Length: 189
Image (tube, rainbow, N blue to C red; front, top):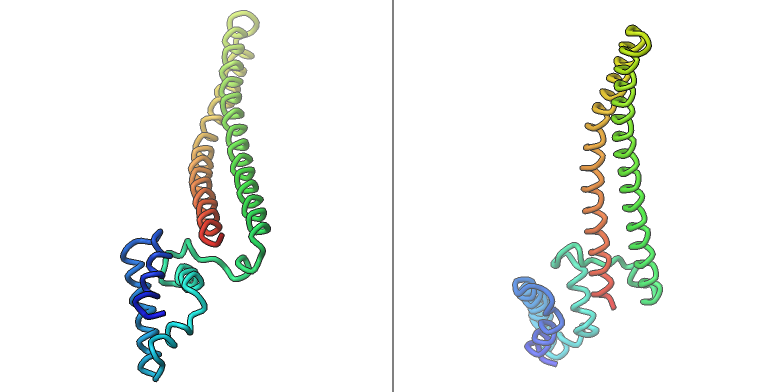
């Protein structure tokens, strides 16, 4: 195979990459072939040193010349495809379960805040009733307790918002990792 045929097949294997990256691949492997030819090899011998165009394309995708999200570790590549699919599916399921757990905790925290606020308002309302029906000093104490409970629920809103922001960031991070895993698996199959 001649250099131009090799580079054309390589470009065809890398069609999913941007034109810029394909040009970088062609330039890189063209330089390797030219270097071998300057070392005394013929053009056919220089191209024949590569195992196959598919392996060269995968090597380029996994190297630093491509986007880091397409790198596939050697340990993962050495596993059988079925096992890689099972492991990546298990990783996706684990990540989804982790995200669901974080959001469940968030929902529970928000429910507790709402219940605290309602409890505080209910206690304050009971205190108002006690001011008029039972004894004003006891009613005033109960109103104060209700206001304190409602205030505590308001102080919990700030940390709950921080937890919500973190869980939103965490969800986006995990989603990106899942997409990266699926992209790696699609490229390696």
